[in-house]
Length: 178
Ligand SMILES: [Zn+2]
Picture 1 (cartoon, rainbow, N blue to C red):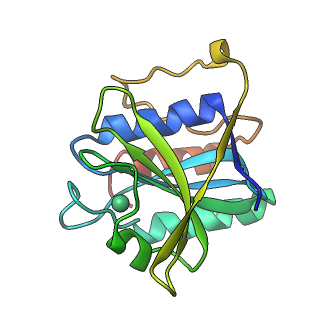
Picture 2 (spheres, rainbow, N blue to C red):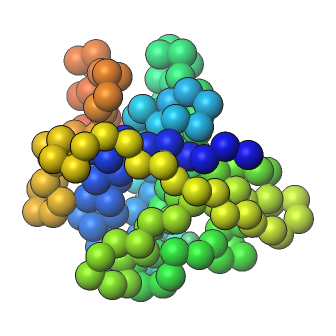
């Protein structure tokens, strides 16, 4: 199977989102073409115990899939963070996956440097497989700060939201009401 391909600036944004949510787990969706990520979509974590689990908020998730459809993008996968754990799927991660054989990126923030790994999770059989990540783009290209901002600038690499979508998105991802 092919690798997961993600531009460096999007990967930095993904990790930045995970850091902003600390000590809570962060979660979000990845959209693009096949296994090439072109859009990182941060989602609200509505788990009752968000320091140890994540549950993607349902309305935001539905809206994200609608945006993908409108833009002709594929659903590529899911990401979430492990604030203190290793970048390895838990049994809960596997069993509560959005579907069977779905790509999950897991970001461990246990150490100073984030550790990012990708897997295919097989909900139907409690198994996972590692997937290699190809990071594209030059090291100096990122315009994202890696911490200290609440401004979500998650939409890059040519995919932009219209004004209404963007406003909605800001409300969702800032944890406001719907
Ligand atoms: Zn997990």
